[in-house]
Length: 184
Length: 341
Image (tube, rainbow over all chains, first blue to last red; front, side, top):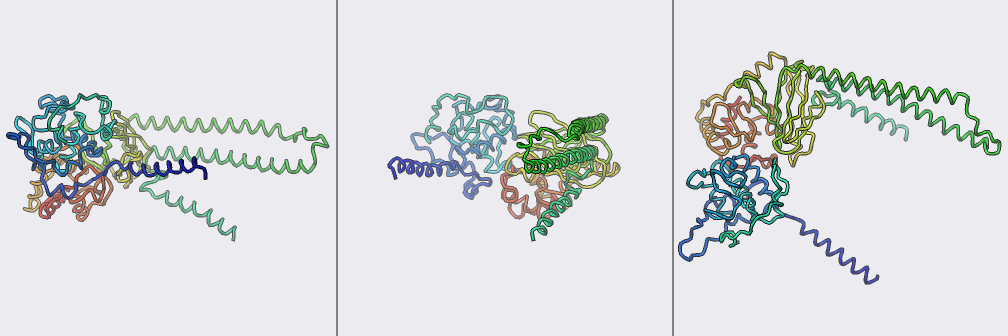
């Protein structure tokens, strides 16, 4: 057995091991049990008095943030629940823009979920009881993708719904300098 | 043993043919004008092509036998291999003529089928918009009069003998509308309007299904087509136009409150109530339909319980979420849904 043959055999073995990394994410069609134990909105608001440290990230964040399925489902809900009516396709209108780096109530995924679930003054309705926890978190994941916060491989380049715009992965986003977003 | 197993193998496809003649979902159902015309055309094509094929095979067999005889005669030494059979020339001319006549016949048959289908399309009497969604069918009976416009889902009723134009749209991805017993396939393409004319010829129930892969639950995207007499159709239509009745029992009343104020109303609409969501099937006369979740389950109380409580275990990936209703809420919701006859 030549050393060259052995080397290529080794390379093949390493390649086969690398295949294991292809498992991208879990596609959960039902909210995880922990979804029911902690209601959306349990996390504290973004305004932290003094120099106190912000509360830890909600345990569900890892299930939805950077999850391609959650982002795609959230995108459908964004259209179906008529978020477009006020926020447009992220550019804002009657409601604030969602594709910039400004977050009035925090840009962490649990903070966005709180905003959707509880509503905010001056027009943002509360969606708790109208959407399930799972759907609210899907929406929050999508809202984060509007400002390019999730990693690019999680964002669909071709939306599941009709769109006349440039694919999201091709849209350049400015660097975000939001302190909440930077904390993760 | 061999001939016997061959005989058995030959009988099996014939048995399969028996399945095809069930009218519920069959290309050979011939329950619609288009299906009948295509079926006639199909038999003509099959007959002509089978005849020509048989001739080719006979010639081939004759050619093989002839060359063997010629080899035995040692043509190279005798030098007689250039002499063809006297009949060969006229046979070849006849063969070319047969091809010409056969192809012309097929072209003429196709032309007349096409024309008669266009003629059927010219005098439509009813217009229905079918919108494909992942994974259900939204059905709207169009009418110039808004009070006669009817929205329903997953169950298409058609009057027998009435040419109906079905306008096809899609809300998300490409689907395909296919009711084999009535007509061929037609795609539903997002952002485009497609259509198909159906003229049902016999009453009965037929199954349609999505014929273009459209996502995880593509297999559970089917449609019941009920073809009925014109008076029955009008009766069905006027009943479906009625708003949902107010529930009378306390249990159903509790369900009504939950459905119209809770998460159900964000997506579903129920005529005569405040539930007005347009992204999921209309529930105004849910209990009058034959199936649940686009043909996934037959409509009955048990399935209704299962579906409302946990749709994700019955049709994983469906856009209806598992809400996790408490038992008392579930009893109330199902009691209310059952009043939606």
